[in-house]
Length: 541
Figure 1 (tube, rainbow, N blue to C red):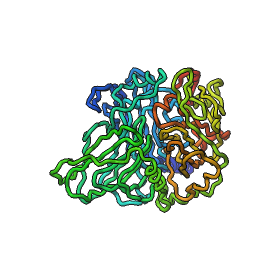
Figure 2 (figure 1 turned 180 degrees about the vertical axis):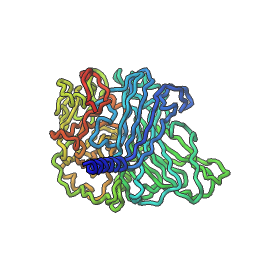
Figure 3 (figure 1 turned 90 degrees about the vertical axis):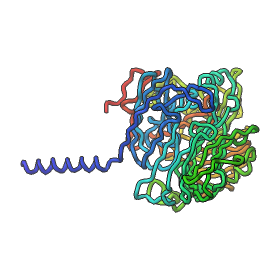
Figure 4 (figure 1 turned 45 degrees about the vertical axis):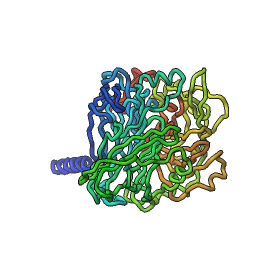
């Protein structure tokens, strides 16, 4: 009998050992969130720092890594971090927005447990509450392919991230009060690249070598254009999708979007401007950094290279030129194009129309006439603990109502494994930028005027890019296809932060009755509880 017990014990140990060895790697981060003085536009401001840094520390990960991020809140106000583009498969508990998570109170901490499951690419994180994003606490996320997964370009000599966007000299408290008093934000005071103004950053390259630049628009209100003096950019990746490698002299990057380009240092050795300017604004803001050749003895000179300003046509043309690389591997070895999205018939069509109503005498923003109001209890906790009266499924219409704007905690219901067509209809005179948490979707079409069923004749059903943030041009529409393969409570929002703050957002509840961990993880045992969930118990393990 004893030899059998020993053999059984050895088998158990072997199984446990193989289980541990096969588990995806863990990366641990400890972040201390504090106030600190910053001078991004030459004026002293109160910033929000992570580990004393503005912008915050970047995250490097490999596909399927587990990220354990302990966030300590040393501010005098509640705080949350969200992860733009990370999909949190089966785990909207980690999304870090007010509909899924209780804020981290002052003096407390919360540990995010995130797996970057089946993802590659360029993303960023940001503070999701109030107007904290106007004070910092954002940073880059780079997810690298696993070593045995082919990448459709040779390894670059270096990899740089650029966090660019508009900036205000008013601190985030005053900007928030401005919005809450019923006003929109003023025109921004300037642009930043990695937290600095004119020529505040230098990127050093060796002549003849190729480098990867990952550019994200982390601003609050404006689209930007990015370019490098005298150099072409080869687009290779958009928000986790490898693209056809088209070459551009400049790129429009709308709010919340991220792009990766390859740049070859093939010019005479000297310093060159890296320029960022606002798009679709009457007054054009510009800022610069420096591309420095390591063998250069000549500083930047001459005028800053100009970019497009208010022209819409060129931006639409560029957007349509961004295509999926069908033969390239994504996070898995199989080609991206093996998923034939264009051969799937959508189960239903959802139309979302933005508007800017005045409600109770104050400026608000809305979707299908509904201006979102944050409840006292996160929607996800209300769902899990079956707390009534927080929201009701169907409070977000699936089509424009044409009625006056009204306040509501807006939640749209959807079923797991649906395949939906979503049309963003924009009747305003400004470019809109929409983001969907938890998903990557296919941008199948752009068009002017009113979308109709006949608009489907112009869809790209073969090789459009899959991404998480898309623009909608003035008085135009954008259509996407999206497989609802990720159960949870997911935020759909404007990336214009004033519009988001004043109601242009809602939540999509993707539901399955299975109750299986295979489809969705249960509430984390360390979940913070607040509102009507206070005093309840999370799971014991």
